[in-house]
Image 1 (cartoon, rainbow, N blue to C red):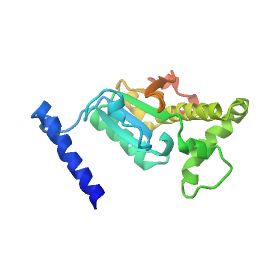
Image 2: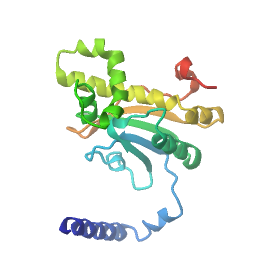
Image 3: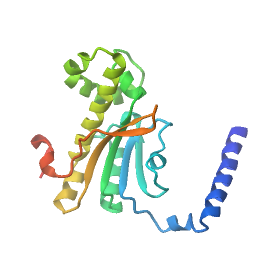
Length: 209
């Protein structure tokens, strides 16, 4: 297919442009990776994690799913967190949502969307817990933005509540979890100031040590 041929041609041009700047650019990555950052973000195609942070390939370990959710029962995201923390030695876990998130918008609707409804339940739980405060916001777009931010905060706590992170803290590793939101309209990231860097910042009921 021509579309795929174009992609392969683009890859050739990209590789050549990288080599013109640094002939060893790809060889540097052959021996492995040692990123300081684990990015847990949305699968949205408009969010290039390492580029928007001004970093290079190999600097960010990435996990993405619909609406950047971290369920305690999801082996995929838990495996990524464990590999990043235990084997790669990441120092910062960044949960980043984004304004205009379709997953969060769907979670606010009283409607069915298919298989994804089971995934969106995690966000609906957040909405249910905070609905009185959210519903007091008169503007629909602002309600949507508020739930996006609350979802990020909730997922930060979910990450901090894993035995993976708590065992890392127990073993003396310095790891911090951060909550951010990306504004697609401006390209800017907002820090929600909800970072967690120690066990005593986790709700008592979720402490396992």
